[in-house]
View 1 (cartoon, rainbow, N blue to C red):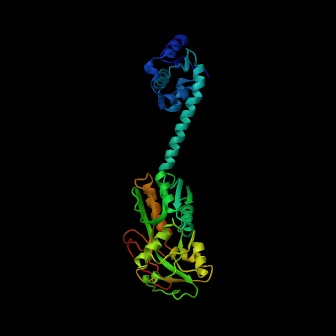
View 2 (tube, helix red, strand yellow; view 1 turned 60 degrees about the vertical axis):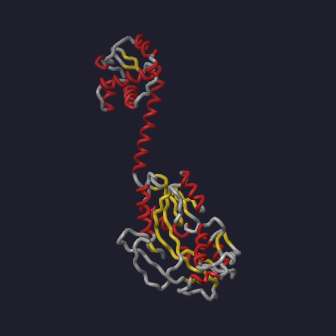
View 3 (cartoon, rainbow, N blue to C red; view 1 turned 135 degrees about the horizontal axis):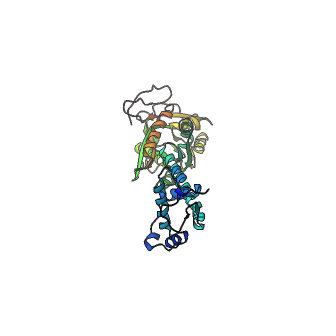
Length: 359
């Protein structure tokens, strides 16, 4: 489209003389970076081939638009637009660079859209690491919470042992962890969710099966079956045994890679084991097994979310922890709740529930 006389560039001159002047450039000119405003002005002129229409399209004045195009030509050291008394045309360089300018502006637009999405909570990817002794028992609640409350969140779950999860968190491979604490790791912030008791799982005819007042001291001589090295639940169980007075001369002769195998070993009569309360319903439904509950205070473990200290999404993760506590209210655990909130204190079957503050 040809521009009228009034659309002639304010800085008049013949195309040849101006091209020679701009084309040569100056060392300082070539050293300057173009601005987004200059690229936007040039892209508008390239689209409309009309200074007045281009200025209207981007909401600026015609002199400001013309000045931005001239500044871009000076910065790049090339003539982009041929200005005559009758029309505006792109130079060969302008034809080539117009597509590049549009690509840059499109990329910036996508960047701004992505930043807007990042600013919106519970959108984008959340890479959640979970330990194996938690994943099968809590993930149904976690997944339902995300599906119901955060449908725009792309949750990606990674089941690994604690040491691998912490490495992934530190390296940025993972965003948030669901695991047993305390970790005692600098630079990691823990958001406690709940405490849960350990339960003694025995063969069907074992003398401790079904009891609700087992003293910890009973662990001193029992043939205890544990998970393999590397599982934090193994270390927690050994800590409980040491507190009960079990000496190092009472060995653990059999171990398993997962709780399902461990429970089947118990059903086969090889010994007894400790299970967290959240795992009991899932794992003891198969085989001839009984459960026994410890006298208060029962041995327990604490489950929490963990994030990098000062994480950019800290506020989002704290809100997620609050929502997850509510989603876990039906489990036999003692929730960590805000002050004055009611938490669930679940004991052995038949025991009454109570209230407690944050543990």
